[in-house]
Image (cartoon, rainbow, N blue to C red; front, side, top):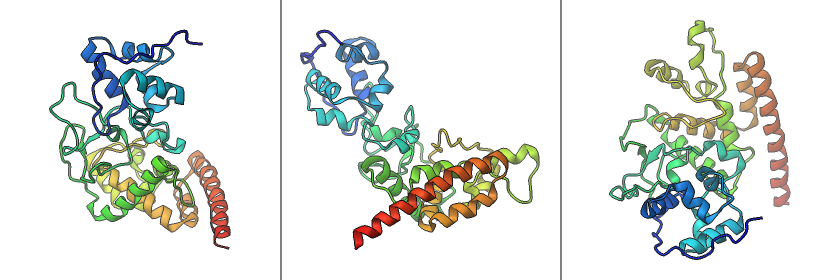
Length: 288
């Protein structure tokens, strides 16, 4: 049990920027008071282990204590963290900013605030204003998948609904995204040193293989499924296509797998299909 945790409000409290991440807000206070960010966090929550951990989850009691110290409401603190993000979507939360909206980012502030939406690995548009995001350096990199922009927009919405609002369809869009990043073996079988670039996503978005080969880019693994911003539309479009096609497409995609990967894919996809059957049965019951 923590004895006498601090509850008094700080003498000077900096207002949070719209959509600011909790760790960013704490770090700005730390800079103001000339102390390390973790020390500032532990001044408020002595039991805290790391800023990243605070971003991912706080208890209701911790939210209240932080709100009291920083002179705000617990609901404001809750909006700055990822506590309510669906567990299936947690791997899509980056550890550092991967994108920026030049319209919403308070660029002249020092230290520059980090917005919560800068860590959302499923977004290609700003969660605040809807504008296209740029990479973390503010550069606008043209995506080679503009022809899939409508499907990508739909996929972004699916992933956002699941992560932020707990709204699902027949299966988890985040789980689809991870499956699509599994390695596949195309036909004809390429040379061994080229196998690294073929992912299941390429069976859904055929031009992906060419783009990856041309740019010599290595896609992330299912364990860390956050693509660079200019490649992200391909994954979002793939999620949308599979979700719309339904369980049969997962079974069709199994044919692109071999060996242990095929076994892992089959186990994961059959679990998703089984959950989807229950979801559809439940949805039909609501119509009766």
